Length: 425
Ligand code: PMP
Image (cartoon, rainbow, N blue to C red):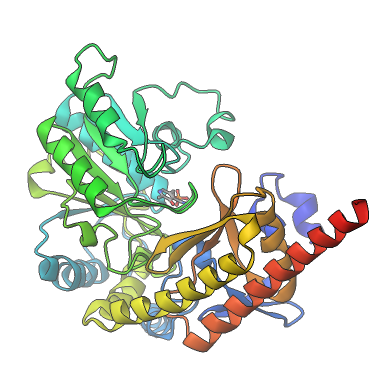
């Protein structure tokens, strides 16, 4: 670790939560330099939905490189890009009756979000964007402006204007429909809400604490967008790509966003981002939004192979099956430790475990889990939620093994606390 501590910036993040040097990874497992194995319930924050080094992708990339396939091609036409586009259209868009244009942006999520915001503002000729409490959309300037978490916002010392925050689903508790507030602001021309070009949301807030919006709420937002001439942007960077059970996280609600952002797992583990928009919104002038790394050809090769997981219903069925295992186990643990008031929420293979009565416990559990051989992160405005994000392709036995390690970590953290309380008493 000394190399990292001496030479790498203090900005280091995940290395602090998981302080080992990793050398290999396969499927849902990581291996450190001492040959210890770890079960990965973090999956590169949603980048490794198909597991580490998925053999389908690895084999395709090796043979592509060995045949001198184009690795960098700016945004020129390449065979790899053509194959990816055709696969994406035929496997993902057509069967869902979706018609979108594809735009390849710089390779990170925040690049895709910047692009979506810029396009929406250009089309509507308005600057304001509505985002939701606890939303996370990235940390470049425009994305940061639509990100709620103060840990990131306060650091930047820049103007974060042209954005208005509205309450997300459930923000005021289950009994209050947060959209009545949004509607009132839109209807009242003197509310101070500048007429928005677009609304951006995550259907499940990944960094914000696994806050899950309902079908009705999503339909309600879509209806407001239509009524008040705002574009609907769904940021599916973390919970798209199958994470919430279907390829797109909004499918269950039957809504059709105007713009969709994808990154993380769309590159099959490699950097890549994609913005989808309805054909009539394709109002860019040629080269108007450019960049050197738009479309990563190696990622196209990997992604095209991995999209074949969506050729049939098998993956979606497997996710639903594994969701039951995950949810049941988490609910069992929550009911065993009732006095801590643990809330379980999620959909597909993204779940949160929030310990209401002890905000620090989530990070203690994550640290203990790591000691036991499980990689699992926290999220939420104060890191109070343990976040479950295993690869979608995880074997059932490894999922169960990981859940047992998690249970053990919870047990050890709680019994450590209770011993401590007894002693104090
Ligand atoms: N949007 C969402 C929903 C995200 O979860 C993230 C990353 N956690 C981003 C945008 C930003 O992606 P990146 O870190 O690749 O810029």
